[in-house]
Amino acid sequence: MEVRMNCPSGCETVSHLMNCGTQVYVLPKKRNINIGAVVIGFGAADRKFKYKGKEYKIPSGTAHFLEHQMFEMPYGNAASRFTALGAESNAFTDAGKTVYYFKTAGNFTECLRLLLEFVTTPYFMKESIETEKSIIKNEIAMYDDEPGWRAFFTSMKQLYPDSPIADEIAGSAESVDSIDADILNMCHSAFYTPDNMTVVCSGDVCAETVLEVCRKALDGKNKSDVCVQPMKYRPTGGSASLEMYTQFPKFCISYPIKIGADRAEEIFMLRLAAEAVFSEGSDFFKSMSEKGIMSEPPSAEIYEHNGIGYLAVSGTAKDADTAAEAIKKAIKELKEKSLESRAFERELKKLKGGFVRMADGCESAAMTQAEFRALPLAALAERIGKITPEKTIRAVDDLDNLCGVCIVRPHK
Image 1 (cartoon, rainbow, N blue to C red):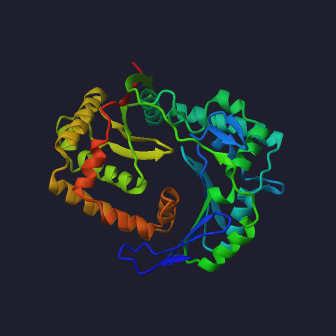
Image 2: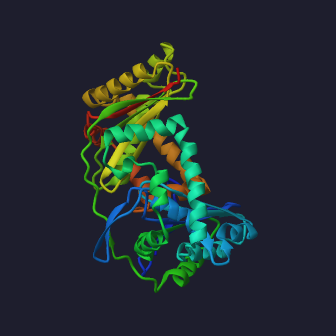
Image 3: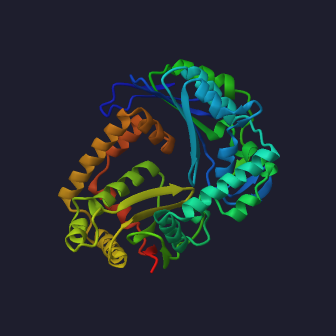
C-alpha cells in the first residue's frame, strides 16, 4: 500500500494494487458525503477486440447498453437498494470507460459491497433488454435534437470518419436493436474483470475497510483474456453544415492530438494552451466580443483513448462561420508563435489553483481520479507542477492542421 499524506497540493491518496489486479484509490477527506466508484476499462469506442482467441466486432452503443443493464439484479433494480441505504447511485459511459458510483452520508461500507456485487453480477433477461431498447432509443432521439451534441459528433465524423470514437456513445436505433443477451454476457465476461477495474473511494472512509471489502468481492474472480488493439485511424478533416431548431448557430472544430507515454501531463498542457487562447481573458474572445460575434467564450475539450485523441473547440456565435475561421487562425498562430510568457504563467497558476480546488471536493476528486487512473492524484499534482513552456510548446506543435468542422444553423 502506498500512502501519500500531507501533500502540498492537498491530494492525499492511499493506493494499492490488489493481487487480483484491481487498482484501489482512497482519497481521505473530512466530509459528510462519501463517494464510492468502480471504473471499468470498457467504453463506447472499444468495439473491436480479441477475446479467448476469437475476433469480435460489437454494435455501437454496446458499452452504454451494458451500463444500463448492469443495475438489473435477480432481486430487482440495484438503484432501489442504494435508495433504501440512503444513497444516490448513477453511472456513465464515455469513449474509453464506464463508471458506476454512489454518494452517501451513511452506510458507506454496505453501499460499497452493493456496488461491487452488482457490477460483478451479469443478469440479462430478454424482457428487460427489450424494455431497455425503447428507453435508449428515446435517449438517442433526445440527443439528436440537441444542436451542440450534434455539432460535436458531426465534427468528429469529419475528422475521423471511420473511427468508433466518432460514433455517438449510445449508438443508433439500428445498432441498439442488434444488441442481445449473448453480446452483453460476452462483453461482461471479457471486460468486467478485476484486473480491468479501478475502485475509487473519497471522503471520511477507512482505507483498510475499503480494501477488505474489495478483497472479499473480487479475489478469486477470473482475470481478463481480452486484447483491444490500439485504434489506428488517420484523420482526414472536412466540414459539414446542419440545420436545426436553435436560436443561434452552434459550431465545433475538432483537431487530432498525439498523446505520448505521459497521457495526463500532455492533456493538462493542452488544456492550459486552450485556456490561454480561448478563455474569457484571451485576445481571441476580446476580438469576437467587440465584433459582436460571440457573447460567451468557446469551450475546449481534450480527450484521448487507445491511440486516438482530439481537441474540440465548440460554442455559440451569431456568425459561426467567422468564429470557426477565427478559431482555426488562432490555433495556427499558437503553433507558429507559441504562448506569450505572461499568458503561460497566468494559465499555469489557474491550472494549479483549479486542481487544488478539484482535489478538495469529494466528488470532483473521485471523478478526476477515475479519469486519470494510471496515477494517484498526488502524483498527478506533481506532473502538473513540472509543466514548463518548453513542454507545452512541444505538445502544441503536435497539433495537426487538419480539422473537422460542423456548423449548426437555425432553420430558415
